[in-house]
Image 1 (cartoon, rainbow, N blue to C red):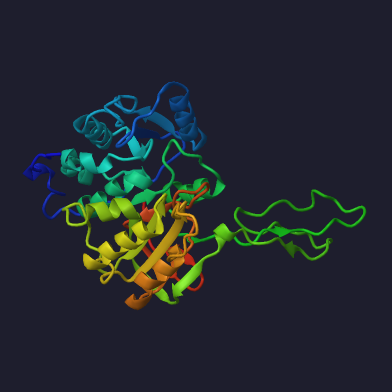
Image 2 (image 1 turned 60 degrees about the vertical axis):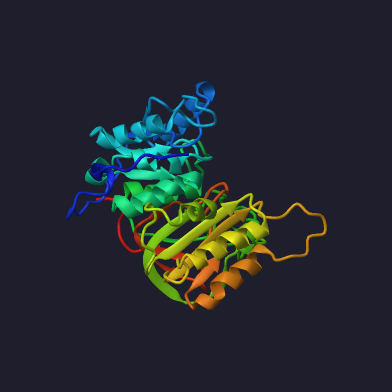
Length: 366
């Protein structure tokens, strides 16, 4: 597919400009809904997507081409880019949510008005194929974006809580996977069952002093993190979906990974494909530049061959990340899973690989 040459006005932020931070969100704020990749069916699906935004206390404004159809895309590349450009030019819109991932975000990058986007910082929220936009914004716009559920995904407590902390409160939270569920022992006879309520999610349930010591339930394997190389590192969070990132290598849409914390996740890729893409990141010099690595969830990342006895994904991560000599861990609650964390791409953070934690070091909103 031939793509147009990027004009001077769209090549990047204005020379010498120092972009500010996106505004923090407030209840009742208008947010744009755009479809940079696949289309929305409209009707009941679009109603459910708008309901997700309303539940967050926000007022959705739907882009003109969200329900358009162009093959498997939500309209032509120019039309999808135009929806995004309009949302960044509209002073009434305070943030922009991608409706879906799929494929197609990379196709619109040459048509985005980077001067307007850089001059009007607003949070962009989404994941999966939206990784192409997270990377390009890090390279061209200069402000943070949020890797989290698309507007059309489920917004469960961890997703909502981490998003609210970052986008509404402007906090600098410490993120970790949920602890083992702590269940109180049976109440003694005559005890008040309303004496204690649940603590903040995720975490233990508060136990009143009048009951027996709490007992821990088994840990869901999904919540386990494993250090590839222990240690603490600081840097700018950059990354997203491994396949989308690998496909942009060599393009002008890739940011500088020097000193960054590389964040990766994947879904539906066999082990040899994971190996191939990580090898590409190494050959491109990306792995050798980063200060630390967080690999989230790799859902359905197994080959279909019966009796497969090759490398596992954890073995591949140790193979590619272990020799780098930088802190790295895997298993973070990031990726194609329900109730994933929202992470601010482009913001400075500190990881503790042994503890499996990510601490945000700066507010991402003003």
